[in-house]
Length: 477
Ligand SMILES: [Zn+2]
Image (cartoon, rainbow, N blue to C red):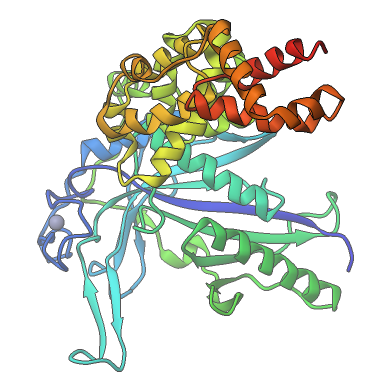
């Protein structure tokens, strides 16, 4: 197959974390029983007037700032006209000509993906299908989601592979969660993504005709669907065919995209400014408030951790969630520079391992094992008061009842002074005479039995490296 350049652009919908909907006072809670959070405004009854939700505008500004966008002083709500059973007004209030935010970028590893815009809009309802089932045979509509505030973030077609699309969406999600503007839960629908894909033979050619893929419900589906679609287009073009502009649906059980309809152009929606809504005005005060509300973002935290001697791998893990990054930030504030890598090891290998196995959230776990306890562990390790074995024994106890590591370490017979280990080593040598002879005569592996004996007698409290050092000395090596 010939070589092609792949261009992918993503349109991502993020549900803004407001208490109420975009243009009415109904709760923005789509998980409530069907049609319980609705009113004349969000169900599009005649004679009602929408009132914009200030909180949604502020969150949109904060999201735009987090994405390095230019926040426009004036933006305009427009009506996007189309009929669908879950859209009772037969138009969606969105922004077209003048969006809230424009430009911007997201850095994904070494790549910078440019953004076209980010605009506010309201969500539609949800259709529930019960075809051929009892007691309902047909489809029902739930309008709880109708009017929920969304921010649509549109990227330039700068993404050149399914993996980069996957990484871009992960990075975007991470930034939005840090900024506190959305939960970005793909399963619950607070993060949704459509993907535009085109191919061309060389950089000199204009972008190819794009197909839009909808209906991807997970990060993996985005990767699978775009991989499939790129191959489909390549085969088509190689065989002399042409890609047509259309919307395609991803069918995960078949592993294929299917044509749904020819793709609409903006003109098809007959956008026009909503006469019921004044333009959105962003004052200097609003901008200032949201700049201040913006916390350190993932990339900044990652760079900070790496500057403290952590590997990129460790820094990536520790900045995955804001609560974890904040936690580790508190930890490093309490340990000396030479203890920071050890602190990272303890959090990743012990705390996160416990977290994986427990039903607790990170917030809850943080209350049981406060950052100060991790700092204490690092200190105990540095002082040689505990070794890895002891750490392994006491960590689950720290998680179980929130006990302080210093108290727990006091319960363990810590064998830190060499004379105690020498005594145990001498006993172990006596008890394993033949292994000792073997070891002395050059069979290095024979030391295993003796070390194991010391570890057993010390109930795991001796440091194996120290034991080895002593055995070598005893054997005159
Ligand atoms: Zn309502």
